[in-house]
Length: 166
Ligand code: PNS
Image: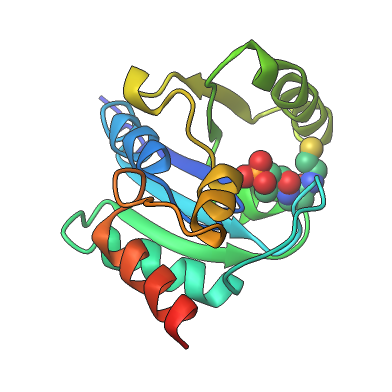
């Protein structure tokens, strides 16, 4: 009987910063994949104002998933499908929070399939408590002095606080 290949999935995004919603999607992915690579994009499809550098985002994701040996965090440049090919990952994971996410996500999934038809995009629904959560809202609430401790891990929070202090 042939040995089956490990299932490798990529969870790409800006992760600026990683939220509890992202963490939830990553942990859910481990139910269906053997290995998960969280890919922090140097170039997001939608222009967004950055808070942390890509290197800082990768570093904090590694801290958050320190105890989970099946999860890695890596920065990538260029096309997501090229990164996926390089890693022999055939599954792209995206979280789908609400209908409003759908159009953008559907376009990206179709374009990625046009670019490499062996890749499948899988959409996972987050825990309902995180269905409203986004990095951009965390950035906004934090920058206006609001409490974001419920929305991010302590490792992310301490980096946010260090940035505000320094
Ligand atoms: O968290 P985001 O910002 O919604 O993630 C978007 C991301 C990074 C997944 C998307 O912008 C992307 O895949 N960028 C890499 C460049 C690329 O492949 N663009 C074409 C996508 S169809």
